[in-house]
Image (tube, rainbow, N blue to C red; front, side):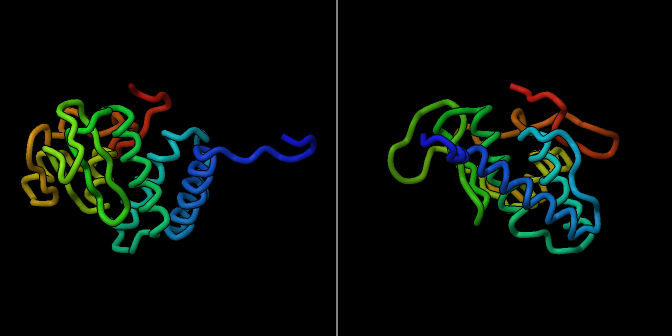
Length: 172
């Protein structure tokens, strides 16, 4: 690196900056103050997911950048916690990940597929909707081997009464 030249941000730093920007844009759209919580990935991600869900609950269209950042971040969190290739979790149009140990597929559709819309996915991720309720409501299509995510969701324990979100510490 040349002396005096700033270091190029890493991919993780760029994703975190985009997440913070999206979170603050969603909070502004809700007429809420900017985020002042811990500037660590997990709490920021949970705050963004919750802000998107609050917008939906209020009947407002959530900010696309916030939905995209929250969906991609929560899918990445799931993939980190449950590595593997036997189940594909799809949240169109924002992302898909392969998770859960088991038979690896190399072509075509994996042995198990879960698909849902972005707001249902975020509600599952933060715990405002249970896996069983989402299945019963038809909000989630799940089929094939290992397609039950109930043991992996929500991604964080309850943070406060009436809501869910990331704890101060990351769970593994």
